Amino acid sequence: MNKPRIVVIGSLNMDIVFQCDRLALPGQTVLAKCTTQVCGGKGANQAVAAAKAGGNVSMVGRVGDDAFGTQLVSNLCLHNINTDHVTRTTDKSSGTAAVMVDENGQNSIVVSAGANGQLTPNDLNEARYLIDEADLLLLQLEIPLATVEHAIKLAHQSKTPIMLDPAPVTTEALNYNLFNVDLICPNQSEAETLTGMPSDTKETAAIAAGELIRLGAKTCLVTMSDQGTILHDGTMSRFIESYQVQAVDSTAAGDAFAGAFAVNYVETKCLNRATRFASAAGALCATKRGAQPSMHSRNEILAISE
Image 1: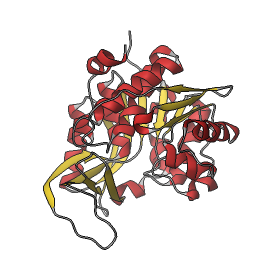
Image 2 (image 1 turned 135 degrees about the vertical axis):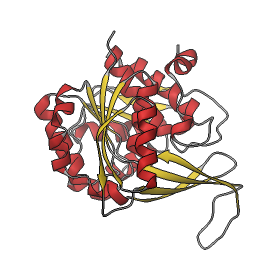
Image 3 (image 1 turned 60 degrees about the vertical axis):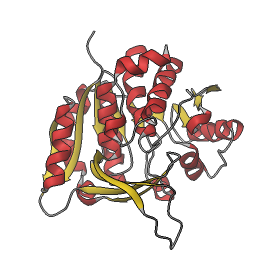
């Protein structure tokens, strides 16, 4: 069987990860136990997750003309991801993120967009053939919102299914045509920002999911960390339980979920199966430190999801 063709348009960042006993409060300084550099960025994370889950993945994005840019592209190539449309940007540094992770695996992240902020609609026009040939287009919000909106427009013209992970989200996203997608997968806080509705329980998250359907999405998945996932198919909502693991770093669990879901949904066309597969990928991701190094293989995901 041919591998699902997944195109990811999004960010590439170098993550500077600080392992701490606790996260810093406003005005507080904490000492890190260790510091590491890890390839990240929501777009690149999801590309690696999709590739490890069994996808044939192409990445569209921008990096700086610096050492971080070289590392970020090389790491994608190690996972057999097509980087023909990851463009070097001479007047900007590569995107970077400062990630604090506490002893319970919770995190706090500050991101500098760098070259990611220079990804334009014209970059997407040059990669149009990839969108035309894709089985699914995977998007996030760490690039300019106008570029995300243009990607959605191109995918509609190509009749390519679209999955949007609306993160990181702000109310500014409501000013763009971002909801007319086949799948949207916010977490609880993102669903609340987008809808103005509480999403802290299964019941309220289901209502928020219904509101995102009303706003234009065909299917909505609200991820609730270790509580599970609300799946709304446009007609009704259901709850998919999570896989219980000992979490050490939740930094990229949502990205693991999105990349794995994209691949399995193309393969099976079954929302329930794809959600369970993605939930397993997200849970496993939280058991290892770092963003892309924490993504698990297809066989590892299948071992706990079937």
